Image (cartoon, rainbow, N blue to C red; front, side, top):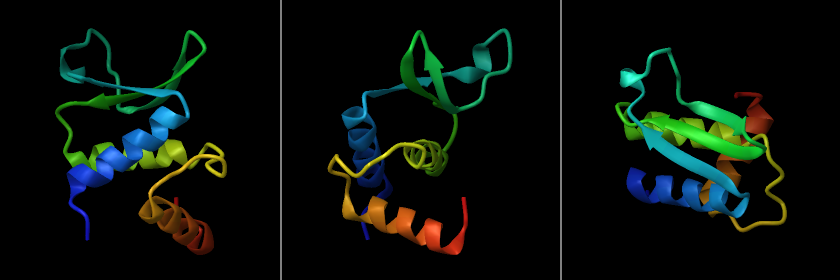
Length: 93
């Protein structure tokens, strides 16, 4: 079993191949409430991660974003494909 840091790196690598930028920021200091997640900013795909959240949350946010994209033409780690297949067959999000 891979450690969580290497899994996050796999997810970030896949996001980079899809030209999805990932920003880690302190979201507690904002004037208005911002949550970790995916958005489009000036036509660019962006994932914002709250640096105060645990790595498991970061993993979930990136993974759930990647599920929205077609990953057929890029290399992604085997465990990511397996998890996506498992999610599809069980119907879980």
